[in-house]
Image 1 (spheres, protein in one colour):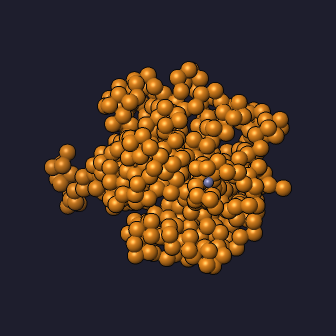
Image 2 (cartoon, helix red, strand yellow; image 1 turned 90 degrees about the vertical axis):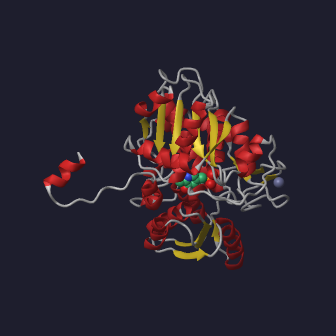
Image 3 (tube, helix red, strand yellow; image 1 turned 60 degrees about the vertical axis):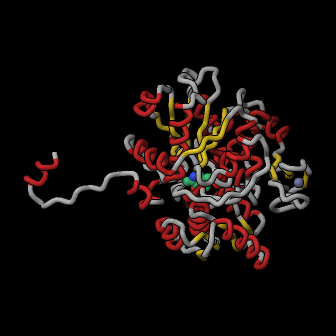
Length: 414
Ligand SMILES: *Cc1c(COP(=O)(O)O)cnc(C)c1O
Ligand SMILES: [Zn+2]
């Protein structure tokens, strides 16, 4: 017995039973939404049944997840999610905003939000008896899969562009995955990984292809919901506005799915506004949003934020809808805006990779353009750690002076 009813195509609404399809809609290639058995969940559970659990990781939401418990006690598949929320008071004041929070996904086990998806994919892989799991990745999805696979003793194959930041490649290799660096773009790695999965019978995790990745990412929405329950004084009746960076569009779609689950269950009253932030040089989804269409036209991606550098976003349609259906927006930021945001967040002790800082850069722009109002409660998602791309971090700051080991030299610099 599966823990979910089936799938619904996001393009043609065709419905499929759990055993009928594995990845995208056979008719039109549309992304599939996993459909939960909402009635049965509603009958069996109250929100308190979940919020009172001692389990701090994303597995506290097991009744709302379409996978069985994967086991793996004492390994890091058990600790994905459960990330902290910080207040950003010192950054909020100059922007004329209050309150402002940041949820720090860099604190996941392999240091990005992708661990949420990889934990669910691994649970699914175990449920269907898959021996090898493969993914294309700009780096983080691969690291998340490789790390969690290593932890539970599963085989992983990763295709990443050879231009991926060195720390991410190091992570893949140290976790012992079979790593193939593709002489091409992320998009080339994506297409190749699908062919290889078909050829060699591997289970494919690809973002915006495997319907279970969004089911992992939606757990960030559940955590945000649960956190707002404790914030009633500050988030009194205006909905939360959430800023998230967007590449393939699967994180923002996953957040949207998570909140829709909660609305369908009657556990949440107001849908938060979802604001997607893209790099000016990789703006296919924002372009579609601003053109008032769902048709995604590929771009030649060029941004230092490698995690959101995508020619053809694989979850573009749902990502456009996530903003459109929640009264949200799309915002574009330059690489300079992103570097400034890395330094700004750093000044509060938060170390973000470029794609993570992009969300905050988007907020700065939204405040200037009055897309958010001073009293709007705002939460920014930092999706990945600054340790993932040290080269970019160094571009965001001034170099440290090298000095003679004398007090005189110190005095000169003071
Ligand atoms: C993957 C990733 C994103 C973008 O997620 P999409 O689902 O591709 O839109 C943003 N930030 C970081 C750090 C990521 O790893
Ligand atoms: Zn379809």
